[in-house]
Image (cartoon, rainbow, N blue to C red; front, side, top):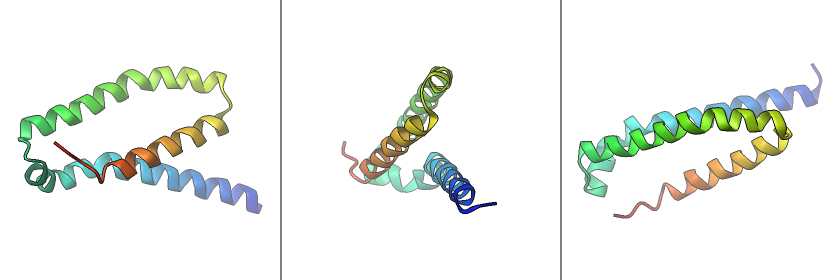
Length: 94
């Protein structure tokens, strides 16, 4: 395996690791979020359900989009979007 192949594999692994870490950290952070945001468990469930519904609807759409657009561009754009979204998670307001 050459250096380019290794770099691509490492980048892919880290991207997936970070994406799933952000996605599944919601349950771990939920008890602290309830008190700091003054929301109920039902409201927190609505937040997560909204995320899941949007994820389920947009997955096939972006799957089709990935067939038409260069994957490097698509992944680069959405890694940036994920980074901005993750950064904005530190500014919750009610």
